[in-house]
Length: 158
Image (cartoon, rainbow, N blue to C red; front, side):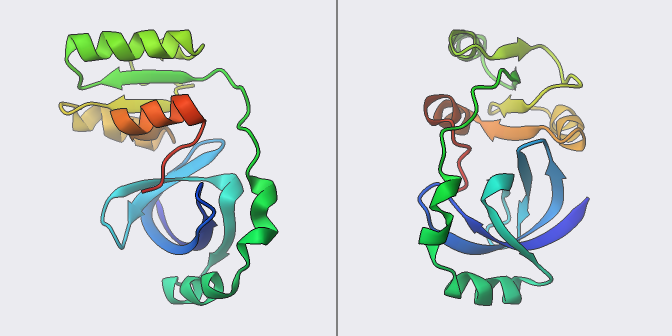
C-alpha cells in the first residue's frame, strides 16, 4: 500500500489538500488513513483534481483552484448493482440493514467475496474481515456512511 498527497473536491464542492497512507482502491473509490485526522477516509476517483509529491504542494495548489471549474463532476451516480457485506452488528440492526440494501437492489453477501464493493462495519467488526476487505480494494463504511450512500449516492468524506 502506498502514500498519496492530492487535491480533492468533496460533495459540498469544497476543495482541500489531503495526505493519506495505506491507500487501497476499488473501481470508483480509493481510501486510506488521513494524516491530518488519523482516520480512514474514502474518496471518489472522479473528484481527485491532482496528485502531488507532497502535502505542502497540495495545500498550495488547493488554495488557487476555482471550484466552479469542477462542477461537471457532480453528476448523478451510476445506477450500478453492487455488493455489500454487513459485519459486527446486532441481529436486529443487521436485519434492518439487509432489508434496506435489498430494497435498493444491493446484493447482500455473507463474507468478503471477490466482487464485494462495500463492507459495512458495526461496533463489533473483526479486524480480520476489515483487513481482508481492504486488501481487495473494498470500501469500508460505518452504518451512518452506508445509510448516506444509499440515500444520496455519495460516499461521505468527513
